[in-house]
Each structure stands twice: as structure tokens, then as C-alpha cells.
Length: 225
Ligand SMILES: C[S@@+](CC[C@H](N)C(=O)[O-])C[C@H]1O[C@@H](n2cnc3c(N)ncnc32)[C@H](O)[C@@H]1O
Image 1 (cartoon, rainbow, N blue to C red):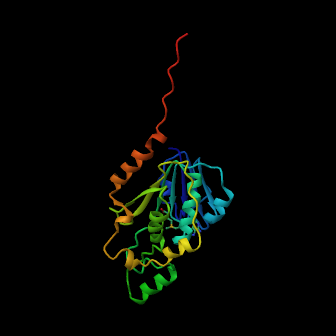
Image 2: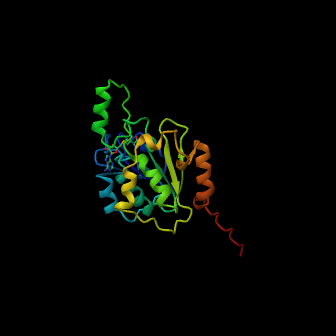
Image 3: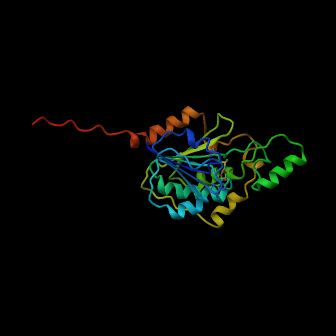
């Protein structure tokens, strides 16, 4: 495993901890010093749509999608990321909001409600949660788990067969997921269709499915003349 893409990098906290030879971050407004990046690290200053329109070649082994926390944007980011990372693993942040206010699509509205209610919580996850039922229904070519034993659950997904293309759905197919409400999806906690898992169990499943793709093949011993 050697290459990593992070969509939405903010202060670079996660990005700086990933020790892979090739690291690329994408953010229209990164909030850290870009002038002294270590070798192999690069930051594309722009939106994820701009990045994926410009970049069609670089293959990635791991992607972390943590940009604009809207369902439609994250769905687009995922479909694009899968074209560059068909053999690897993709993590999607913020798939389980902490409450109804956190799940509002509009961040400003979420913050307005919190200050109106003197709510000290600042969480905003947006409507990324709508992605999971959508993938469950419309993308059988993907396998995923929701790593749910931590504060901020994340979706871990991969392709059992990297040669099966992921084609983006549009229009009315996606509209029904835009109608899903937090209270309906999470009325009884994290639903089974999210495939909740603890972290180690989720990682083990991914390694069992795709780990062989990243094991280096030992060089054949040379025959003596
Ligand atoms: C939650 S922060 C990312 C945190 C970071 N991944 C980490 O682990 O520290 C979200 C970031 O997404 C960026 N962002 C917002 N819209 C974006 C877009 N359309 N494309 C890429 N990044 C975007 C914001 O500027 C912000 O820095």
C-alpha cells in the first residue's frame, strides 16, 4: 500500500499522520502551511469536483472522503474516487450523525438551531448518512461496513471485483434518498443495513477481501548458472 487521497483536509491533522510514500489532499480552503510539505505529499487547492475533473490517472490504494458533508457531493466523490481506487479501500466520514440537528444538510441552519437552543454541542455531520441506504440498494458491486465503535462512525468500503464498474445513478433514483430523515433512519439506533461493526472486525473483513492485492510478491530466486 503506497498511495493515499484525502478529500477535505482542513488543518491536515489526519493527512500528516498517514505515512505512505504518496499523499494527496484536496480542499478549496486548507488551513495549514502548504509551503513545507514532506516529499511525496501534495495539496490540490480546489473543490473535489475540480480535482476529479483534472485528475484521471493517479491510482490510489486508500481514499478518505471527508469534504463537503452533503449526500449528493459525497456520492459523487465516492464514484470518482472508485475510478482512481478500484482495488483499494475507501473510508467515508460522518455517516452517522450524533442527533437530528447534526444531520441537517445546511451547516448554517444547524448552527443557528444550536445557538437558539443554547446547545453546547457543535457537531455537524450533514446528510452524508443518506449515502449508506443508497449504496445498500443501488450498488451491489460494493461491500462495506460501518465502523461504529467510535465517536464518529465511518464507512469502510471496497470492491470485491475491481473490474466491475461503478456507474453513478442520477435523478429520480437518487431523489428518494434525499427524502430520508434522520429520525426515520436512526429511530432504533444504527440500522442493520449500515452493517455496523467494531473497528478491528471491519478492518479484518476488508483485509480478508482485498489484502492479497497489496501483499508484495516475493522475487523469484535466481537460478545459479
Ligand atoms: C471536516 S473537515 C476535514 C477534516 C480532515 N479530513 C481531518 O481528518 O482532519 C472538512 C473539510 O472539507 C473541505 N471542503 C468543503 N467543501 C469541499 C469540497 N467541495 N471539496 C473538497 N473539500 C471540501 C472544507 O474546507 C474542510 O476543510
